[in-house]
Image 1 (cartoon, rainbow, N blue to C red):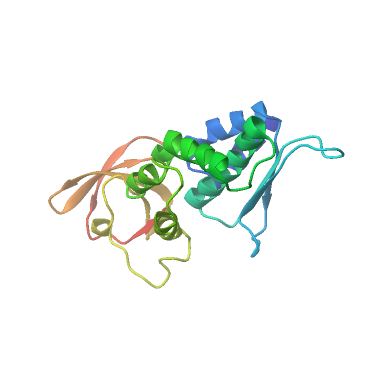
Image 2: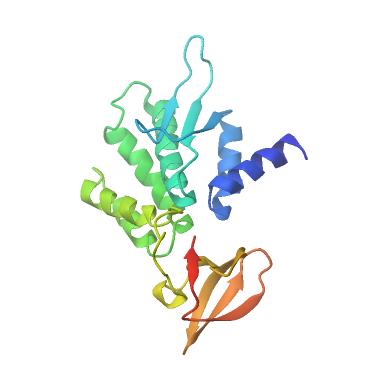
Length: 207
């Protein structure tokens, strides 16, 4: 396995699959030193710009975040990089950064879950960014934490079309729901593209 293949494999473990190619190319283009860290209570990610004795861009993101929250934080830090390149010394989360973050979110909203995309698009539609909407989005993204549904029973019928899930009794395969058909759902296995029908009352693990 080449260095690039190893790097992409790591990114696939932490990002939605659709975001991997863009993220790899982004890190490569700016020669970013990228760190996936253990969970930190003080922060979810950070960015350091090049300076004397530290002559490269550096981004870190906590590795215990679910894939969508990881993407959310990565784009936040990428916006700091973009802001530094365009404006140099400005307020950390000022008007300039908010504009760059809004632009990145608008460009890549499609990589978030279907029920989150409209909120991300709304959040990215105006600067200054609207804090109550930020909290609403982050609440929804936390629903994809592995322990969020612990102790709860989720049926396929509970999820909107376009959701990704694993069957509770067969979690090795990842599916995406396509269309509701009376008591069953037409679903696609993500890795192979094969289509199956799954009972709406099947117990599932949302991704």
